[in-house]
Amino acid sequence: MGEPSREEYRIQSFDAETQQLLKTALKGEHGSPSKQGSRAAEKGQHSGVCIRYPSNCKDLFKNKNTQACSLPTDPGAVDLEKVANVIVDHSLQDCVFSKEAGRMCYAIIQAESKQAGQSVFRRGLLNRLQQEYQTREQLRARSLQGWVCYVTFICNIFDYLRVNNMPMMALVNPVYDCLFRLAQPDSLSKEEEVDCLVLQLHRVGEQLEKMNGQRMDELFVLIRDGFLLPTGLSSLAQLLLLEIIEFRAAGWKTTPAAQNYYYSEVAD
Image (tube, rainbow, N blue to C red; front, side, top):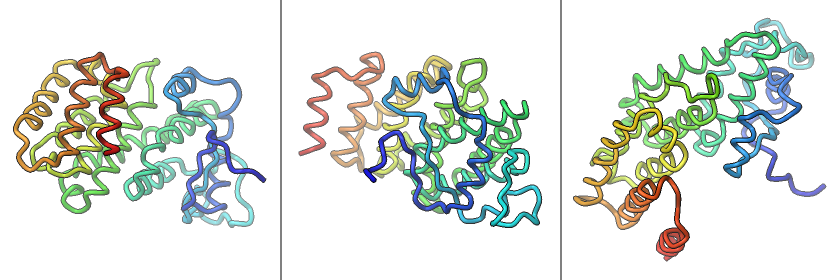
């Protein structure tokens, strides 16, 4: 067999049993592309999902007596609140996963809505995001990687989840607060946080500005101050900050000249 196509989403740290479990949770999410799928395609992303899930799959059944050899085929047998916690837990540990988990969450939400007309998974997901948001400083102090993964994940969720085809207002200020934290001097001295800040602004900056332009202006005051007063900034961090300043100034677009310049500088 050939190599998997780019349209396959593979998470190698997940096992086959839970893969089957969440495939059950995802039942019904197929057919014609959604508006969200079309939006993702425009970004060069994809909606095809080939998933391997975590090892604690038995804990995700509503019926605790379910055996691994008899996984349910009914989406209603899956505890979607626990599924949400599994996805968040893994996102905080794996930054590669956190960059793409929004697509999986969107698919589960769509499947649950079609099957039962409910929002158990979305409610569980947002509750868990709020819990992590409230302890974000402790998370950052405990694990810089976990903090970067969290910011990546919440921005990914903001990018994918929609209410009446609009970004979720409930996530706007938490996402902004995370980005403001990344723009503080002690964060700008760490390349991992600068890289995260710039990547997430590339991803959701334009959407955030449409939802609250004043906060975006305030955020870029911090970013400009960090660039102009580069105490402790590495040359790469300075380059990244300059790039995102020019990216926003150009209407959230990269000009060919800017792309050639920044890519050649990073390569050097």
